[in-house]
Length: 203
Image 1 (cartoon, rainbow, N blue to C red):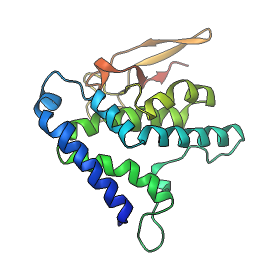
Image 2: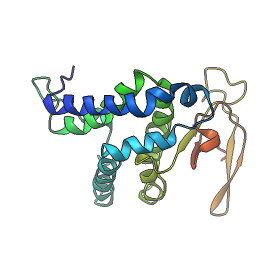
Image 3: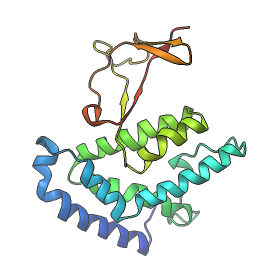
Image 4: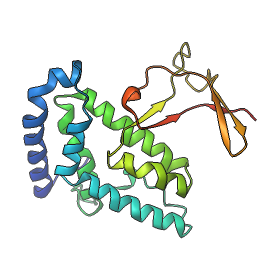
């Protein structure tokens, strides 16, 4: 269990004030109305330097990848507290990622889903499986939330076994692919700039 230090608690209080001021008064419109959550999430990223921290982290990851370091695909789970259970060092980065999520969850779980799908699933998939060139082209703008991502995996009628019932295919066509299939229930789908579409290779 991570115990926030005094600096992290100050960060938590600042994020809580932001949520109380910018999000709580508009909760109905953000959760159930016609106001997309992306602008206020971008403001939160800029206000607390989450976007700049992501740029620095991404730059280091790409540098290690170019140098052939097999551990270049970092995971949030690798950033942990030290032995006495207090978050410090790498825990500062962990706090910067977790505290906004925790505070958002108190009011607006839907925004956490929108954020998690874009930054976590979409950017995470590209960072995990993509080439350096693909990561540079698509991942950073998702990590900083300058662009919105969506992760399309659920097919109509697929049930809970999304991979086992996968019918969507991608067929090689020269230097590209022809995609054939459909997905539904795509979080961020209508507003996404980048979509990771899960399918099988028709080879």
